[in-house]
Length: 179
Image (cartoon, rainbow, N blue to C red; front, side, top):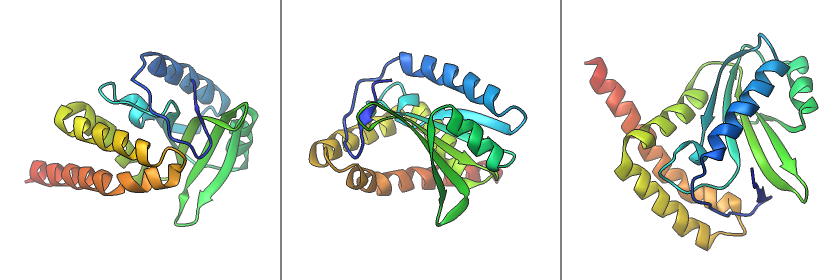
């Protein structure tokens, strides 16, 4: 994985190598914390072949529990533990960095089934199934990457409304299916 310098935004054309790297990383993680993982998924833009992405591998992991042992094992693989989010104690972030503060992987770990994990997977699936939506998202990302190339937080914030609209579409589809 090429990675991106911390706080920067650089988009790349999709690479099939990202899926291979995910599969290798998944195997490593599963071997490191055996019996603790319920599900592990390749998410984020690197999991959507029709769009550009920051070359940072996003992995969503649903775990039985995120305890000291699990944290220690993931840290032993080279991941920095960024802790639970203030607004969601069931979400823990781990970041793998390369030389020069290059972000390579983000592990989005959840110790409870729910919206976080499920939304990441559903967003990926929705964009892969809806090329027009994926195209719109890609165009937005390219525009934001030009404006905020040195400010990843603003780039991410600029995508929030679009992402929420996709989540709303997913929720509408689920409601329609249940009728």
